[in-house]
Length: 293
Image 1: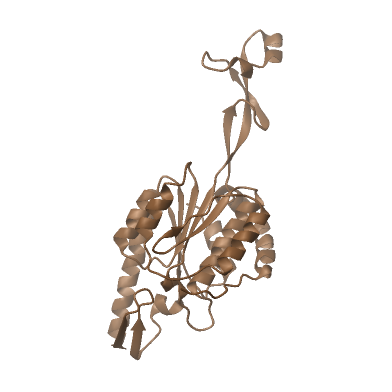
Image 2 (image 1 turned 30 degrees about the vertical axis):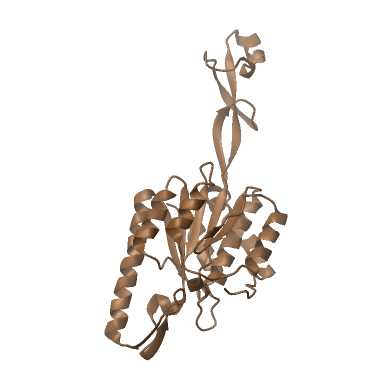
């Protein structure tokens, strides 16, 4: 397993602060976690009144209104509903891949995960970033800047290695989600499509977002001629000649694979995004936050 440090520049969060202001409306409704609903009883702001029903608690009656109207009314309040954000970050060996000057897939995914957590923290809501490969490293949702900083420190030295077991990892993780939540999975999603589909359906009761991170070489197979291909997760090697026909076939299969994931997400009402690591990080954020379902 890799023990290298994955750097997250402080300037990234300064820019994210400015970016947050630019798209504040979208953030507050989709990612920050705030949910408001009309609820009888103690809350924040009065939203109006309704007539008393036999099933209501006596203590919720507004007696001042009764004194004026001689009718029983319940005061309704607007109450904040907090939506916990669970971020599942793929830390398998395949995520350690990079080509050229771009960051590795894991480093790019870590910036995305940290950015989402930062947006949630801005509204003082709870979040957790858990990593998964063959097993899932579960962390408990908390709130606050101190927790965010500790999370970033942990991710900077998080081990990257092993094979991806997205089906088993989401099965384990789904058992620790005790209320309807926002779940964000960040991975290269280069696994068995049946396992990915199973993971999507398992978490479809929640607000679900899938973010695929690929290296440019994986996305377009920008190699040609005699090449050695290495499976980072299994270590197997293949010496082959990469022809134009092979590149076209690869592109076709990748397009079909990504299209299948997107189709399953559409069926369950989840959101799916795909980026390469040479995409400016704020372009990726703008894409995910600005687009609505």
